[in-house]
Length: 151
Image: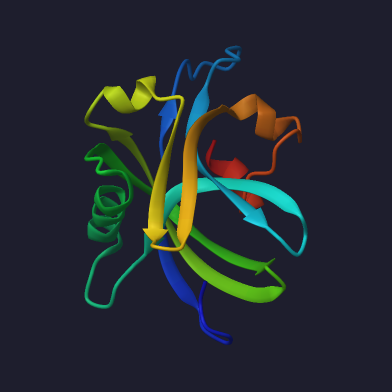
C-alpha cells in the first residue's frame, strides 16, 4: 500500500487459460486473493507489484513473478494503462497500472489449484485460477473493475 498522497506505479500480468471463443464458458484467469478488513470483503486481482525507480514495467513484471511465485513468463504483450482510485483498509489509494497479457513458461502452473506466496514476512497471499464467468456474474469481485475491458 502506498503512502498517503502518493501515486504508486504498478504492473499486473493477465494470465488466461482455457477456451477463449465467444461461446466457451471454460476460460479462467490467474489471480491473487485479497481481503479488506474494513469492508469485510474478499476481492481478486491479477498478480504483479510495484515498478521500482529506473526499472521498466516489463522488467518489473518479470521480477515480480519471479519473486512472488518463482515463475518465468512468455508471450508478454502490453495491453494498456489503467488509473485506479480505491479505498483499502480505510485508506485512499491511487495506482497507475501497466497491464500486460502473458503466459507461464512452465506448464505446471496451469495444473495448480492454488498456491500461497509471501509479499513480505507478515503478508501471505493465495493465488489461484478462477473462471471468468464467476466475476462476470458478480459472484466474485475482480479489481479494478475496468479490468473487465481486457477480458
